[in-house]
Structure formats: C-alpha cells, structure tokens
Length: 295
Image (cartoon, rainbow, N blue to C red; front, side, top):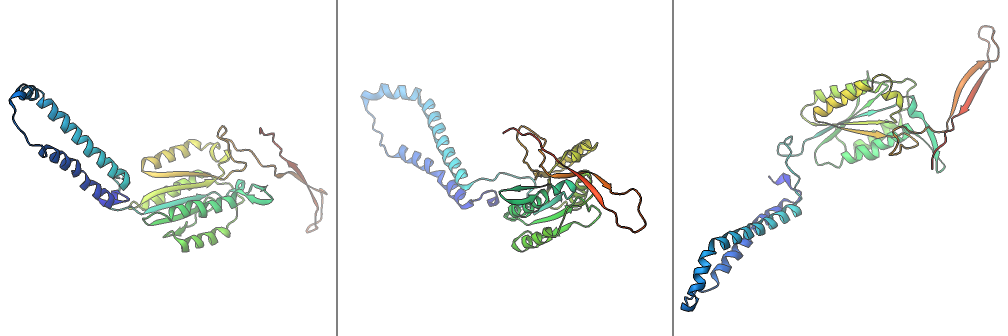
C-alpha cells in the first residue's frame, strides 16, 4: 500500500488526523449541561420536530470535514495511483532505441559558427536526453540500440543504465557513422517488436530517433508502419518519436525545410575513351538548393 505514495508517512499521519473532527464533534456535545426549564418547554417541542434534520446536517458536516482532511493527506502524500501492471513495486523497463543512420541523417548545417549534422544530434539526444532521463527511474532500466542500417546484426545492449553505462554508450555512439544505403523504417520497428516479445517480464518503451524524411513514410509502406505502431500500442508499448531534422519542423508544417547544402547533380568524364588503368579526370556539377522561407 505504501508504494502508491511518494510520501507514505505523511499519508498515515493524515489518516490519523481524520479522527480529529469526530473527537471535536463529541466534545462539543458533552460540554453543555442540560437543565429543564418550564418556560422553554415549547421550544423543546419545536426542537424535537427539527431534531432529525439537525442530526443529518451535523453528520454531513462531519463527513465533509473528514473528507477535507483526507484530501489534504493525499495531496501531501502525492498519490501515484493504481497501476494494474505493477505487482508491489515499480517494474523494470526495457528501452529499445531505433537509431536512423540512413544517408539523409548526414544532412549538415552551421549554427552559431559550429558545424553539426542530424546524426551527431541524434547521438547526443540518445545519451543526454533519452538515456539520461531513463536512468533517473527507481526501477532497473536497460536499453538496446538498433542501427537501422544493420538490422541483421545484434543490437547493442546496455543492461543497466547508470553513470558507467552512459559513458560506455557515448563511446559506442562516437564511433558510428551514417550508412550509404537507405533502409525502410518498418524493418527496424519489426525487429524492436521481436525483442519486446522475448521480454514479457518488463515494461516496454520504443524510441525512434530520426529526421523522418518523406522517404521513410511516403515510399509505399506508410500504411504498414502505421499498422505496426497500432499493434505495438495495443500491446502496451510506449512509443516516443524524436525528431532531429534541421531546420526544425514548425507546428503548422509536418514537412521539414531543407538545408542549403551543396549537392552533386551530375558527374562527367573529361574523355570518352581511355586506355586501361589510365587515370581519368571527372567534372562534377553541383547546385545549392535555396528555398524561400517565411520569417
């Protein structure tokens, strides 16, 4: 019972304090001595007629006073509520994080003189925001990181999130780079579901760190991804989407703007015929994508 309150002893004190209005009520009924007075007989008859009403009003007032003290005790004890999934103590939690490392995550920009990219932001968010917040929980928290470009490989496991595992996670992520191939997000979500199915003894939380470009959602598999999310939600999986696109999405627009990066539009050889193993020079044609933006 005490695990449902942050301050359980305050709640116990509040439960004892509920008896104080009852004690005060009984004392008030005992402190007056009744003296029969002939001149007041007609008033006694009137009082008897309204006695039942007075008793009901006093009982209602007494219950309201007791309820007020009980609510004050709940407020100070900070009631957490009843969770049917809990069995006496907070459940351990398995966090599965899908790290998008597809080519679009290499999109870079310069802000305040510092050069950054979406993948670097994703790695920073994974350690400083997601894992750090999870490590503050009272129950055991573990995390498995799935690289979207390496779905056949074994996810990187961190059995207990803490100061030591956070440093290990940061070193692991520092060595990662983006992949040159595009992978559909559905495969990563399916692998996360397989991991959850193997661990039914813990609570499940799914994190997806991505720039969520249109190719991830509008390449013909958006219905399948949506259906998979619905299936996970029905199995009590908590889902969090972490957006690292730049420029940041606006509340009025779901489509992110594109950075003004230089892109290669064409590449041609200087000569059409060359001897075997002879070096050949190429000319690359580039273009800067500039998009008008509303201030």
